[in-house]
Length: 112
Length: 117
Image (tube, rainbow over the protein chains, first blue to last red):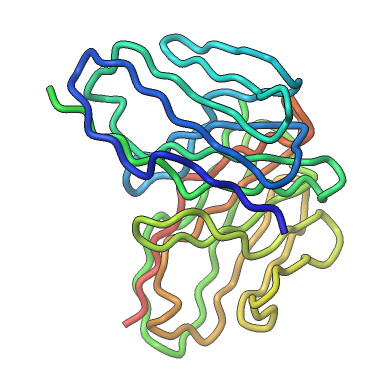
């Protein structure tokens, strides 16, 4: 089946630093989604990407849909303490009953 | 928009009892709902896909008689953990799809923490 490799597994950064994380897949997707999950909460959708090469921003967050359709990255600029959490990528393909395949997550810690 | 609620948020039950978790899409009609299970510090594990008015589709290794899913309307799906045991203790999260953005966007509920004693 489809597999997603998300890296890095965890990051410890200083407030104000930029962050980059990415996901690669063994097969193509036609939608890439990035979520953030706070402890004890459900994931919240941050950015959705629909076309290969697409670059989308949401405030300090920027994500891109890779040209090969097998990868995506998420950048966070000028990190702040509330960016702490687990970030998940998810890929979907329409013919898979709309199911998404999730990465294992990147745990972000921001030191003030 | 795209708000999904879950109830209860936390439940503690005795071994052998059954627990029902509700998932509602509050401001849109969800043609499909998904049920996930998440262990501490791990990713989301899809348990089943639920379409309104039809039987749920379970992922490999998930017992359908153990985890009963009912998708009675376009805004409500329920997961019942039958004869719960301590190993069923976990964080259960639902998501709903439909009505917003891409066909594939899922919007998650806040989760339900189940503890079986």
